[in-house]
Length: 226
Image 1 (cartoon, rainbow, N blue to C red):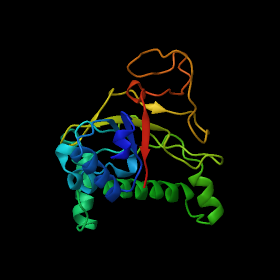
Image 2 (image 1 turned 60 degrees about the vertical axis):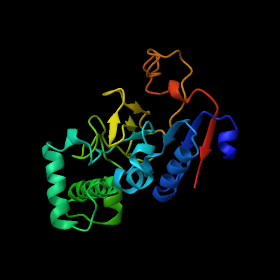
Image 3 (image 1 turned 90 degrees about the vertical axis):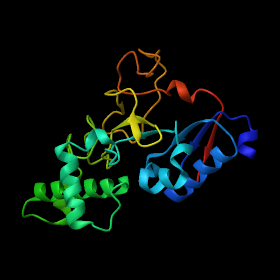
């Protein structure tokens, strides 16, 4: 109630799944209608959106990098069918509506790629060398255009994300094909003050591979953490 009374019209919820579901439900129940952003750790339809109430989640915005298993557009693809077959064989207790199972699956696939690159030399030194030498690796359940890259100075493999908006049943891609990205080997993104090329996406006119805050963030911002 105090957050609502602050006149903030933008809410950023950075919380674990259970807490995020509670926050979404509370925001809806008190009649507050801010532009609501949700961090990617808590965007599972099965673990967050359904417990919160699907109708209460409509319009929430996030940035993701994994294919949402409840999204019909992926369910006829070979990649989705392969994941589903794996789930039915090896993870029967897992919830196929929970994107965290996709996350775990993609982590395991990345580890397999590292081990294959290591060959017969499975020393810690060589495995770490391969793990920090990933270059534009694709995985089946990553969103189109998302790749993995690491270096000795950058252990974070995700360099791009796709804006998504919840439509009451699943996440829909926003600005399809236009990824938020950051420069390789940089620990965090930097805001660019150059005039954007397009007002809708706020991409830099110099195409310098940085990004500025999207239009929807303009306003009074309040963050709700754990």
